[in-house]
Length: 364
Ligand code: F6R
Ligand code: MG
Ligand code: MG
Image (tube, rainbow, N blue to C red):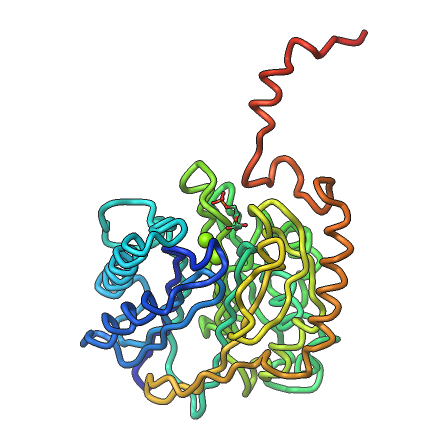
């Protein structure tokens, strides 16, 4: 067996430029400088989607490696220093702690990591979204790995026909469960149809530990116990040769499904597929966006990126997303454009209720 490569994507919002819309180029340069000087990495690519910096890294040190996580943490700290000097918006916002404690998980930044032996050819896609939350991946990942109307390979590729195992996380009770698909899709859909609580963490080739996809699943507000923004998730998908073809992995994004996030993390809106250059959310701090970058891995080297949604094939999806956005916006502060009370990141309800409590009269 060949040696294992780890692909780590670690992301954080450590200051917006301007407001919550984008990342200042100096922060990206700072990150590139630090990762470029590291002897731990085989290769790296630093990018941003909206106001989130994404560190895409390859190495041989495995998942949850303290040294890699420490380096990512230190990188975000250095970027925060630059952000503070420039008084960028929300400088350091995703770094919930002052001191690094060995594993970056639970400290604010999002982490998606997978370890595998490179195949003869190893195409991967890294999806990165802004102004939404990890559950935003449930719908497209289900389509990629379990829906034959999206992925014809499930029907006609003998290497895919057996299906996939889905690991689901319960973000409220902090537990996990695995479903074997297609046999258990009806049971699984009961859970993943509620993406604010149940998220697809990883997908494996049926009955094996061969990883096919993995995502970031932390929810900052649950960790911090206060509003700290939505979590702007990342998803890594390996493609081809018994896994979804690149085009099958991209296909779900032609239907801009409705996700939670957008303005003040408190609204429903369509997830719009965009190119990197169009990844800065502006309208009502949105609408939520997704970028898909493709890489060919070769001995850990990241050949790419290929900016997949920079393609007229997604023009109609963008138009549809704009139409849905327009329609939802007409509802202003009303549900279901505004999220349900339990899901809102901001609320004045306790204050208003306190002030008005004596005006409420009991009815018999
Ligand atoms: C959503 C987001 C933005 C902010 C909004 C208000 O995830 O980050 O929509 O919530 O711009 O920001 P503050 O409260 O910082 O003025
Ligand atoms: Mg922000
Ligand atoms: Mg963001």
